[in-house]
Amino acid sequence: MLQKDAEAVIRTPLDRIYAQFKDPNLTPWLSQVPSQVLREGTYRWFNAKQRQLKGLAKAPRKRSRHNFNSVMLCSDLFEFTEKGHLIIGTAKFPVGRLNFLAHRPFGCPKMITVRESAGRWFVSFSYEQQVPLDGYGCENNKVLREPHELAYELNLLEEIEVAALTLGIDRNIGTNCVATNRGNFFLPEAVTLKRMARKASGAKRQQKRLARTQKGSANHRKAAARIARKHTYKVEVLCDFAHKTSLALSESGAKLITFEDLKVQNMTRKPKAKQDSSGRWLRNGKAAKASLNRSILSSAWGRIRTMTQYKAARRNVLVAFVRPHYTSQQCSLCGHTHPENRHGAEFFCQHCGYRKNADINAATNIAGRGVVMLRSGELEKQPKAKKCIAVKRKTKSGSVRPEVSVERLQDADPGLAPRNPAHDAVKQKASAVRQGYPS
Ligand SMILES: [Zn+2]
Image (cartoon, rainbow, N blue to C red; front, side, top):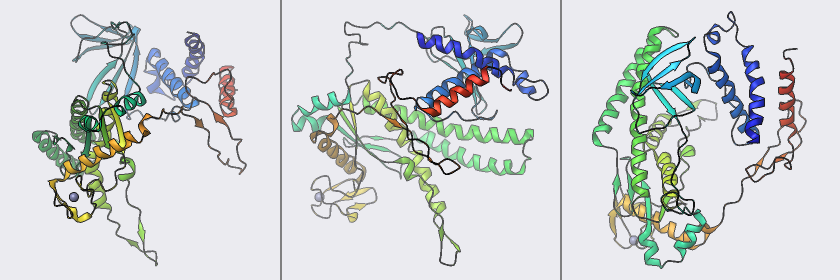
């Protein structure tokens, strides 16, 4: 409550500072915006800055008018009608009526966000709702447990039970499917894959048209919007696929789901430029790597992993990440590892003659490594509280800044936490601004 009061105190002067940017000659586009909307702009900046000072996020970035167009509206600027319309605006600035499609029943929010993306408009909000709780203060009689508690419970079981409750997941770049050690394959629908390919070639064609238009012209804007719509289809298909796959995995009945600990960001880096001794630039396989990167990202691997993590946590399922090395070359029966074991989509062990689908074999190896990890007790370790340490950086004059460590997270008492001089400087600047900037 105290924090809320403090925010209210600080928000008012910030609004006033924002008001001085409003100038009919210098910033005519800002003058057109109602003050209530500008006020929310300062609120968003203030929240982002607070998160940065707490070490939870990076500094708020500058955005152009065309980048992620979104606006926050508070309750005095919108109204939901009984017919399912959304009326936006005030008596002075009536914007209009918006028909919208609600995907589920909802309550009345205090604030909404309206966003435009690739020519389509979205309304998003959250609202307060009373959820019936049981005697333990939990939803649907489910006690949610921490990962180390789940690992401890699983470790009490017999070897056969643990193996039956473990699900290994392997990803195939070639066909973009996700395979499990139980022999299930997840793949986006064939129709959507076909449409995706068609829209990709369409986007390529439109890109040529875009190149011929003049920058800043209406035709340039229209052509860019057409390309954006084509790319949006792929994004939405992959998001849908990731949601469906992660739900199926977390509801598969498994108690331990193991993924390869792949660093997708590192894997999809572009290759370094190559030079010979005379300084001439050589071919570095950039086009081939770009194609591989595209197919890695098209498998939505990172998204499936992230979504499975939170969906599994809601169902008391443990998720583990194992070492990814040689999972496709190792025999899941005898453990023999050799590149010749792999023949395209088929796995054929050179040592014991075991034959299996290559993806299922790899998923079995991943599940096996997950069980080893569980038995080693690594998953039972409690996570340490995160610490955010300010990095020593050289200033422009060459002197070294004083090293400051900032305890973060909720358990740190703000009154006792060491003060960061950099934060104080920001606060001093802000108070100077409030007291009559520009001087
Ligand atoms: Zn073998």
